[in-house]
Image (tube, rainbow, N blue to C red; front, side):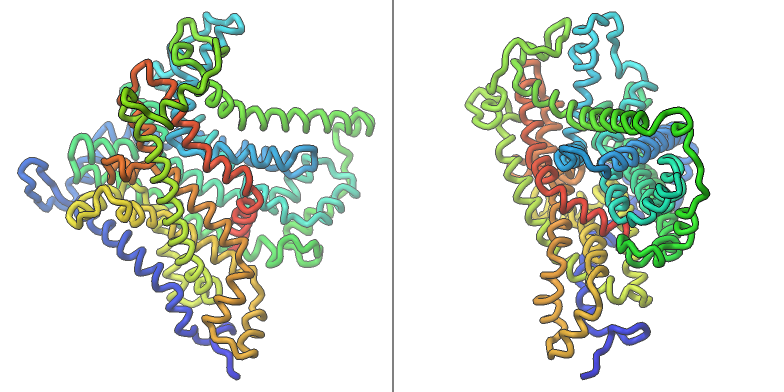
Length: 620
């Protein structure tokens, strides 16, 4: 029997093209067409009253680039992005180094660290907005309780401080993702490299910069690019925390584009701003491809095998280091160094646990506090009593309940159903497409298609939401679950495909060849042999897709309006616009309920998330 398509230079079979066709057709329909429509908007002038259109060419871009508001927002975006990238990269790397060591409770702490990332940005914004609230905030309450009440201040009253608080919130939310990816890279680091350096008398600092850093360099680059793009596209946290204020001090390009498109009704200028933001995001995506195109020269084909001879020359040469006595060894005895090392590690573990868990614990505490305690002056962290009335108000809303409280149960169901459907659909398509891209990714058609697919992930959601709104209104898909499934797939299809591509790349090609020799067709081989082998990757991709779907806010906020379709992030934001003093308790109870499912997923499926990050960050 002749076997085609599994050797370099051989012709790709029809099954390979069929495997990627559904995903490519879907992305062409739901991304390429709306993106083209958005481009048309950016070149046109519209009157929302007369509904007349006029083609104006690049006048919108010229007007935007000559605006002082644009350049102020551009400066805020760059400042915010630099803080977010540095913060997530440094804290994520340090956390990963600590969590890579063996200690009692390591598995529990690894799960705890992922909780902030699993939370929706809307929920994160609610939490941190109350931490820094001027009148009743938790930080001011802490200062008051410890006798430093004179230090209390309106934290969001200063534009510069507000921008830094928004950046800090972004860092807290996304640091676990960097930690997850770096930790996956550290787990693939061969132990013999480190042992050789230890035998040579090399200290931990020099080992890090000479061995560990070169090994995880590509992963760090990946994390930094993703963090930069996330910072450019940050929207949910700004919506909840500051809405661009005070004044315009926290207005970034994403928020400015939203204001022009949906508040000022200047569709052309708004589309132009968002397209400029898209170009910035795509620029960093090209940097990503350029840097990762050199992966083969800096990382082994079989990471984690422990075979020193197969390691990259750059890492091998740095593993054989000249004996250098560390500074601590010249000052402290070996016993003292060990005690100091254990003490520093214990302190780092405690700091990571408090950084990850304490804000969430405070959110739970205020959700079971009487509403009167949340608005008392002077504020205090200590509740006068504990109560479940807030949860009863949102789970068993009676006739006198507020509109938002009554919507919480249905919104939780909507989020769960929608997240499950979208995850199943995109993982199924991603599994098919992942096989084709993994086995035939070097051929021109598959390489260009994969480029286009991944570049689509770098497009800001705001760029697509306006054309979606117009198109869905025409097709009758506005305020429907089907409309949200289509919109969410623009985000999840590239993610699922990339993760499954990495999973299939780890499967030996000889497994398929043996099945072909036994007379199995390509479909039978794929369905009965390959899919069971990559099942852990499928589970990881499903978890990632479910979390992203559960946490998505902007599409749901713009494309839905009725309780039958609204998701829990939309309902939580609705509390912000309708909240009275007596609703603060139910508001925080609803926020806690919104984070329970994703937090439980992150907590109990931490192993699959690490495997998924390992596949996505270390496979090229």
